[in-house]
Image (cartoon, rainbow, N blue to C red; front, side, top):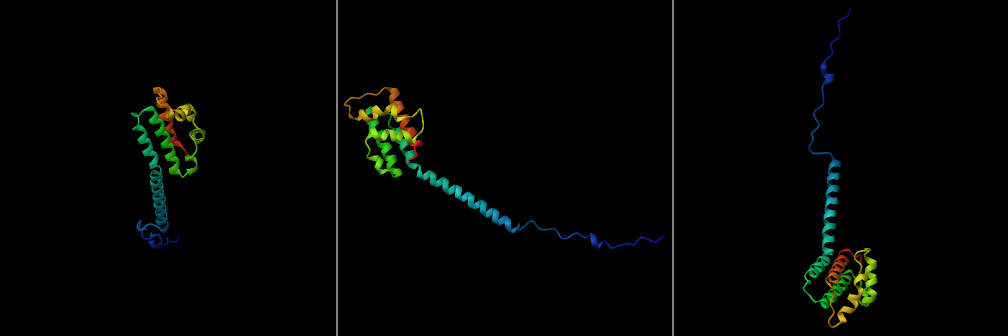
Length: 155
């Protein structure tokens, strides 16, 4: 029998370890894309917040008007609605009479609970009555409907 041949162990040498830093080139692309997406989300959020500032101010004013008389409340609710329409750039709607404006406002918010049709008589006639009185329920309904429209309208 022949003696086994001994081979050198050079074939089993491992290469040097691959360093973890700096990462591969595509890692930087993915990180940059993530940064751009986050910056875009923040920018759009800030822009949305700024564009809706008039709604927050209008709701704050509406909450401060609980001590007004019924006539003043009806006038101020209509004024707030018209001011919101002006801010959105709908100048032609501002000049509409209240009787024609209210159905348009109802068409903008698709809600069964908050509808200007329930308070249309008060909004149309109350500012012209010398001593008009609203029940507490109608007064709260007027404020809630106006507040809901300010929050949800798509002018």
